[in-house]
Structures are given as structure tokens and as C-alpha cells.
Length: 427
Figure 1 (spheres, rainbow, N blue to C red):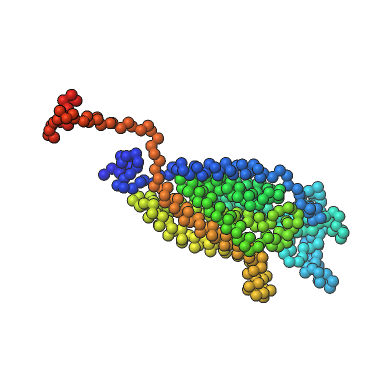
Figure 2: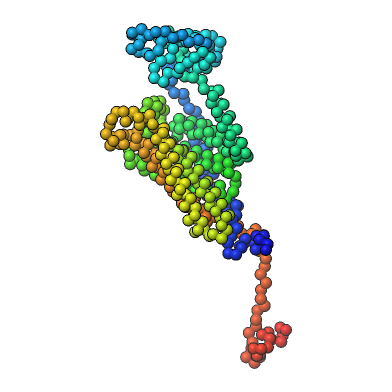
């Protein structure tokens, strides 16, 4: 028996089912094209014109150096009250105008101070007008070499496993960083609305990275449309939650300094952070749901959209359970030092949960989770409906043969039923 689908007619019907099709439906273009045009216009209008430097001159200038020798000494009684380690470090400056010169600096001490040894690459702060006379201070290790090694290992592993798709995913990752660092962050610092910047930036990341990583096809298009709808819901839910909880976005020393140095809407910046954080999880769910429904449709060609939707939702519920747990744990892990500090203070649980810092993390988790929940049924329904969609043939329609019109017999001219239905003049 020949199962060639072409012999079953142009509509692709075979025993009552439709063969899965990977072409992008025209209806989706009515959403994608306006979204792409609006994204480009938004980036043009919000593109930063010029960002002023923050007032950080009092902190000095960072330079690179290499440790030559370390000499530890015993701290005096007065020094022991201030520092926990005493000694000197000889460092060779390797960058800036003073490159090649040697400097003697104090041994780093205090909480979080770097532990240095001969041969270590370090970062120093240069303050030529220091009151103490000490112009250089070691503030951190230089991790550039180690980070580049990790990045190269990561890229090689992705390409070795994903091959061509892995390479495309790396390119899309690079474009994502470019949008965040070259557009979103400078635009926010330039005074643009953080929410608008986040919406435009998220749309640009979604449209470029998903199609670049997964190709121009129906499955990716379903994921893009599902992600776009879910992000709109996430923005609305997050804004409602932030207003309901009366959060202002100023949480710690970093956000306080940012609010003092730049005219930024901090509550809007909080919303932007929720949106960007949710985007990374939502596009993972939408791509997985679209691909799952596509594979189920290929494995079960007789299943219709309703049965495909039910099957995809069963997979989506299991996926959603694990992703929600991952999302909450990610926020909890980022706030773990704060949680330990709050637990050490032995404050009542109600005060801990209602504090702005913890309430902000709760709002992040809830808003992101609600957007994630919405992404599953939306994407699954789109995938189940469009997987059986077939485009109409583009060729010219064949003219239908018209049956000859039967003339009505006159009263004086009749014929029997067994005779020809046409009068003699038409025979």
C-alpha cells in the first residue's frame, strides 16, 4: 500500500486526518509583522542619546596589578581593634599611566577582603589625593582569565552537543546581551520609562533570539506568539501587584545610590526586572510546549486539535510544576544572604514577610509564576490548532464544468420518463 500523501489530494487529507505542516500560517503574520514594526519604532524612539557619568570620582580609578611579595606582621593592640590582618603587599602596576611601577600597599583585611599571594593578578583602586598617603588599595582579584576560560569551555560544550543549533543559540545569546547592555541599561539611565524599555527590549530579544535559535517555522512562531501574549499578561499582573503591595523599588544600598544619582523610576525598574526575569522562563516553556505538541501530532496523525491539546496540557502541567519550583528557588537563592540575616535577627515571621525586601521577592515570584501559568494553555492551544492547519493551494482554480441547462418542456410537447430528458432539438 502506498502512503504517499501527495496521492491523497492537495488538501493533504488521509483517512480523515491532516498531515502535520511546518509552514508559518498567514494569520500569525498579522501579529508578528505589527509586533516587529512596533519593536523597531520603540527602539528608535527610546534609543539613549547620551548618558551622564555618575558622581563616582571620590572612589578613585581602578587599575590592574600583579602581586610580587606578601609580608604579614603581627597587629598591635590598636590595629587589632580595626583590622584582622596586618602586613604589606608589593604590587606591580600593569595598566594605566603608572604601568610598570611598583607600589607598596596594605594587606587587605575585613569581611570579604581578598586573600592574596605572590603571583596573583589583582585590581587596585588608585586615589592620588588620599589623606592617609596610601594611593593604592587592593579591592579584588582579577578574574578575567578564569572567566574567559569558563566562557570558552561553555561555548565549546554547547557547540559540541547542539552543533549548528548550538552555534545559533550562542549567537542569539550574544544578541540578547547586546540588547540588554547596549540598549536597555543605557536607555533606563537616560531617563526613559523602565517599563517601556523592558517591553521593547523583551520583544526584540524574543523575536530575534527565538527565530535565530530555532529557525523560521510554525513551531517557533507558535512559541513567539505564546510568549508575546504571556509577557503582556505578566506586565499587567506585575504592575497590579506592585501597586497593591505599594513597593517603591528601593531595597538596599545599591538601589538607594542608583535612585540618588539618576532620575530613574525605581518602581518601574522593579517591573522591568520582573518582566526580564520572567522572559527567560516563559520562552523555555513556550518552545517546549510547541515542540511537544508537534511531536505528538507526528506520532499520532489521526489525533485532532482537541486530543492534541489535552495531551500537550498533561505534559505542560508536569513541566510547569518543575519550572515554578525552579523560579521560586532562583529568587530564594539570590536572596539567601538576606534570608540568613533576617533569620539571625529573630524577627516575627509576619514582619519578615511584609518587609519591602521580602515582599518584593514574593511579588517577583507570584507575577512570574502567573505569567508562566498563562503561557502553557495559550501556547498549547495555538500549537494544537495550527499543527493541523494546511495552506490553500496557490495555483489557479480549475474551472468547474457547468451542466447543460435543461429546458422546460412546453405543454404541447412532452416525453415519457423512459425517454431522453432532452427534446429532439438538443439530441
